[in-house]
Amino acid sequence: MSQADPAWHRVLYDANIWVSAVAYPGSVPDQAILLGRSALVQFIISEPLIAQIRRTLLGPRFGHSMTAVRNTELSIRALSEVITPTVTLSVITTKESDNRVLECAVAGGADVIVTGDRKHLLRLEQYQGIPIISPRDFVESFVAES
Image: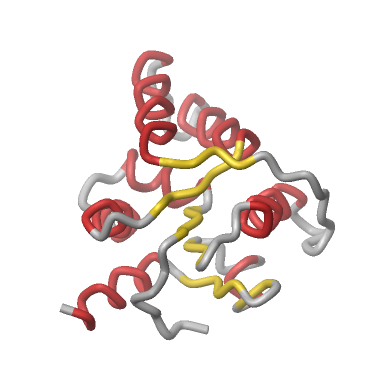
């Protein structure tokens, strides 16, 4: 489903959206987060997703300093409701970490999942009635409403 809905209030950004926003200011993922903030949506996230963001930003591809990553983590926590999923899912067998996204979305009552993961998550289109869309579709939903 790529059709946006202005009634989205609880938004789950996959770890790849947060990482891209930090690594590439002005990118579509960065715009998606900025638009979400301006629309006063409630971001939801879980500890496993925060850990994934931390590992990725500290890793060899991005190599951010521990201080910069800690500041990013503090910002994400300040903007988000941290959810503790109580169910373990195995919907995506080829990339176990994508199941953490679905677990958080379900446990947190997400209205939408925003991800750049074309290989696994976006192919689902929705999970348990929760639309899964790209950051571009999320951004375009706000442009269409203005």
